[in-house]
Length: 261
Image 1: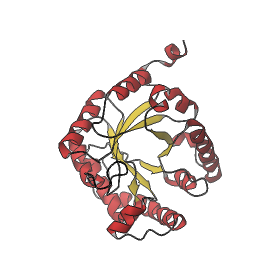
Image 2: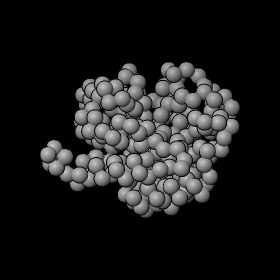
Image 3: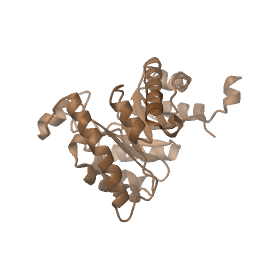
């Protein structure tokens, strides 16, 4: 059994359809546990007018191009789609992927997306309130759909807000994602455990994922494991290099006893 899970997030910016398709097929064959894209409408780095593709439209292709890894969006912006529609989309993609889909969701933050596509940006507080209202609707719609999801269709909530976001994770999520450095992740992980106790949730029922950009995430994964992470997700830009991921997979598969030795 692996010591931890390994995932990749393939940024759909400054790339081509053929390049990103080849990348997610390659990582699936390498044996990663999860493959992700993002839910933005413009590049987040590099040339702001550079190539970019919409994330949820890519998902059905990823579902049929891959065979093993779980997959999803890190994370879907709640503001961009009706919650009931999003649940139906997620269920359909889950069938295309034979039960491997993860519904990642967050409150949204990138103002350019909102402004240029005509969504109301609001405030941090209003977007979190909208997320809190959407989550029970999503879960209720998933129970009504015929056919139901093919797999478990876990819900992952991304974010690190200690007053609202982590409470929503404790109440609704099967998985949680945030960022480093390890000390920050450990602090947020502790807050999430506290929220679980307050709402009567077993903290062990929530899988802990962390997004890393390389460096300590690849070279010293144990720093994040000690902070409470179970699943390391490495963010990658094209050409989506495999070398660091291959090393991380080898580290994950190294038995704990030999690691200590």
